[in-house]
Length: 300
Image (cartoon, rainbow, N blue to C red; front, side, top):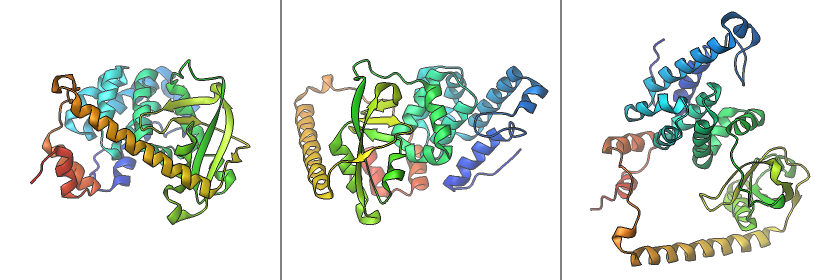
C-alpha cells in the first residue's frame, strides 16, 4: 500500500496511525482486535504480525537516523526507546507512542515513550487518544514507579480557565504546587476568561504518573471528583507573580553557579543532529530562521 505524505501534521499522523490500525480493524477499536480476528489467526499470531507491521511501518516513515532504534525499542530496549522518543518530531511522537501501545511493546520501553510524549506533547497525545479511558489504559500498562517518599494522602491543585468547575475537575494533569496551578489558571485568561483553581486531597494509590522535569510538580490523576475552588482571582494573580519572581531568581543563581564552575566539570552535550534535521524542523514547525540560528548557537 503506497501513500504519499504531504506536509499536513494531521495527515501525517493519521496516515501512520491508520496504516498500523487497518491490519487489525477487520476488528475492534481502542484496545486491539475483535474476537473474530483472534479466532481466525490466533492471539499469538495476531500479536506477532501486528508487531512486525508496526516495526516495518515505523521504519518506513520516520527519519532514517532513528530507524536503527525501532526494532530494539519494540523488543523492550529502554535506551533505544529513549533515543527514539527524543529524536522524533512532534508530528510523530504521539502516534509512535500509540503504535507501541497497540503493539503491546514491553512496558518499560513503552513507559519511556509515554513519559517523553506526556511531558513534551501531552496535548497531542490526549487529542489523539480521543478518550480518558484509552489514556488511562496506557498509563496503567506503563506501570510508572511512584516514589516511596510520596505520602499516602496529599493535596493537589489544578489551574485552568474558560471552563466549568465540573469540566475542569475531569482534567488529568494536577500539581502539588499551588503557585503552579495559579500560573496555569491565568496563563490564557485573556483569551478564555474565567480563571479557576481547584483542589482536592488524593491518595497515593490513585497516582498514575508524577514528574517535575519542567518544575511543575505534575501529578497525573483520573476520575477526580468533588474538587473545590481554592482562592480568588486576585490571590491567584499574586501567587503567579511570586512564582515568576522565584523562578527568575533561581535561574540567575543557576547561571552564576554555572559560570563559576570550571569547564571540565560541566556535563558534555550529547551528539548534535545534522543541520538538515533543524532545517526540516524549521520548515515543518514554521519556526523563524533567527530562532533556528539561536538553537544552533550561530550568531551574526
